[in-house]
Each structure stands twice: as structure tokens, then as C-alpha cells.
Image (tube, rainbow, N blue to C red):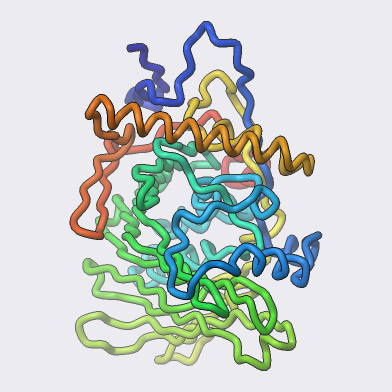
Length: 413
């Protein structure tokens, strides 16, 4: 079995052959399709009106009972974004404006300032969601590997039923590690669809010897009175080494505000000492505008986060070296489907999507016949009941053949 290796500083990072690796004699076109991340300005430019989208969605859901598990529900290409869910996860970390919020988490000298930076970085991961369109469900073994500035991100789909994704990101300059393992549990509630995020998210500031545990809010897709999708619920960030924690509540709009079509993506929260419960800061604002923090001792108010600076004008990755792109790369696995969607060639997109899914079913049957179990290539996976835990097999993520250019020249220079 041949192995392809990438060199990253002092270590070699091996990518063993997977079910996606093609025989050398096959003359199959290697290409990737990369699209721009969805950002603030795109909400105003959507070509899909709410009325048309809701009509199509209701026609698809008319035979679905309330409370049904929608994990395995298959969308037609007309309701797909031209990208995989793994790419959407990665964009939360590697796609941002000119300011490196992740690196800032370790640059601050005081523990309270570092926690405020972690809060700002967490809020930056809340991205607008395009109502009526969803990314592809990743196939087993699918990966997404991108570099942006000093940040390297690698994601792998480690389970298909249920769909579980593992993510590792490293910041080379500031020695920061980020680890996620998560999966959505979608439920149809009649008037809305709720997607609860299960799993864990951990950030380690190695130079500071600090660990930050955090969670992700729910995604609520409302059908009435005005179709829209937004984040809701509670976010909590805790660092045992500094005895500090933050709690953020994403406040839902009132019925009247939703009916008027207003976007009130409010955030209210606090920063406290974990052991005493003493509140140090009030946090308030809107995650799609600005978030501020008020020092309860001095009364001073500061802006922690500006959405316009962080999640506007986002750029897609570009291909730095096509030969080094893994066959399991999301943008390659789904390239034919994405091209069909972008060209509005729905028949081509439908057939290409069917081919990807059929290939996955065939691989599953082959493993069942041979008695083999799927083993992730980049993570060690442990399942305990309904909970999942993943550990990266390598301490750091190497530089990727897909890169974000131009956006962070001010950081790199």
C-alpha cells in the first residue's frame, strides 16, 4: 500500500490510502470546486425568496411526522449548498476578516483578557445560515484540509450513522490547539426544525497551559411566521486553570418581531469567577453586529467583537497544489455535484449526488461482507453510549494544499 506524505516543519504527516483513493491507471479528472463562505452581505443578495423556498420545503416535509428524526432525510440538489457540512465547519475557523481572533486568545497577558478573547472568537463562529439550503451530508472518511495564515484545519467524517465529524486545528505561531467532535440531531417540530449539536469543543493555549471547554448553541429553522434560520440557546466557556467562565444566551425574537421580518440576533451574558460565582462583566449586543462587555467594577464598556470586521468579505480557499489534495477532500468528492448546482444543471447534480451516495453504500456492503470495521485515518474514536470522543493521531495539523490567500497578508507580513 502506497502512502502519500506531507512535510510539516519537523514531522511527517502520513495520509494512508482510503476508499477514495483511485487506481493510478484510471483516467479520472482530478478537480475541486471551492465556493465563497456565506457571510453577512450575502443575506441581502439571496436569489431564493422566502415564499418560494418555504413552498418547496413544505412539499418535501408534508409526509414527515412531528418528532421524526431527520438525520437520514435526503435533500434534492435544488435545496443543497454547493459544499459539504465539513466545509461549513472549517469555514467557522479558517474564514474570517483581517484580524486573527484565534491567535489573539493567547496573545493577551491577563487571564481575564484571554477569556474575553476566547468569547470573541466563539461568537465569530456564529455565521448567518441561508434559509432553505443545506450542505451535503459528508460521506464516511471524507476530509477537509485548509490553511489560512498561521491556522491549519483538518476535519474528518468519522461516522456516518450517526453522522459524526472530528476537527483538529492548530495555530502555528501562538501554539493553540482546537479539538471538536460533534454531530447534529435534527428534529421536526411542526412549525420549525431544531438541530441540537452534540459533542465537545476544547481549545488549549499551550503556551499559557490553559484549557477552555465550550459548547455550541442549537440551530433553529423556523417555518412560520417568517421563514428563517438562526442560532438559539446557551453557550458556555469555562477555564479551570484561571477559575473564569463565560455564559452567553442567544435571545430569540418575539413573535411580532419575526412577523415583521426583523433580525434581532441578541446576545446577553456574563463573565464570572467559577468558584465564587462573582460576576465580573456583563456581555450584551448582537452577534451579527457588535458585542460589548461592561466591567461591573469600573463601569467601563468595551467592544469585544465586530461582526462586520470578522465575517464580511470572506474568501474561498484556493488550490495551492492539486497533486497533494487528498482523494477524500470534500471539494473533490462532491465536485461534480457542486458544478451541477452552480450551473443549475439539476439532472447532472442529481446523478452525481446519487453516484457519491451509491459509492458509499457499496463500500459499506464490502466491509460487511469482509467483516471489516471502518477505522478513521486521522483520529482515534471512542463511543460511550450516545457520546463520542475523538483524539487526533498527530499533535499538529500540517500545512494544507488548499489555502486562504490575500485575506491575512497583514498577519503574515
